[in-house]
Image (cartoon, helix red, strand yellow):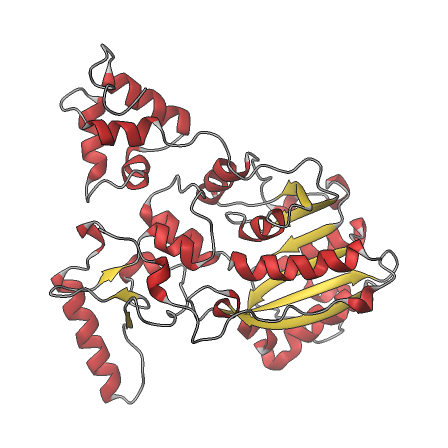
Length: 390
């Protein structure tokens, strides 16, 4: 049905909208944000569903054509299998998926909103709390990936043994590796993991992985190293099973394809951005006041403004939804604006077809917690090259 004759058909538009929304398992707020309605768009959706007002043809077209089929389903013929732990919205899975050589056989995530996004894009519903899963029940796999949270390792560094990490989420990764013996793994974390507790935490982690008979490689990359205009630095730990991968020493760390001069913020910006993303006078005044206060104290804290010609932004954080201070986009003649959820997705290297089925607030949290897909894909290709040639 074309968007020109949708309303000319003798159909109950209110029912069409509600049935579609229920089918998508979305709230009125989520649907409003997903199709790009202005502020308080959930009220508009409510009026449409109550038959009080009707959408325009383009608005109805956007709703009825919102995708219901997961765009990144497994390539069943892929030669390698993976499991996706602390999966979030599947950014790490997506980087491996894009190699066309890896399929996911298991995932785990506890956040209900992330699970919704994950299911919309991959067609799978992740299992729940990893701490409650028996490692023997997890399918065999070639590659394990995990972006485990960096909890405080209060006992780390005392014995440097496997049990030193019990009570932390890294322990759950380690017990699965010990039981399932994958050919390779990729772990991702914040840069500060390497210096946490004067380096003791990182030493415990790498010593345990080596003790499980894996060759371990560590590397630091910024998102802008592989084309994203974002100054996001993360640590990556790659391991190969010395028993099943004879050429485990052949791994080559990916060489960055970009530098801080050949990325550009304008490449991820949308045109005709809704006014709801422009920050209010009150918030803008508060940002400016706090920056002046910080400057008087001699520190550089405060908001940061970028424009289309900037080489890269600050790191997108999970708290971005609160005030957007770390990444504000300059606007001529008015207050700066926050980036949109789609721009946040682009900043993390997610393709245009990636479905965002949650509210703006949840979307910011999800992309802020995710990974740079470009970087993951580069590492995945280097890992697969080892597995292909063993």
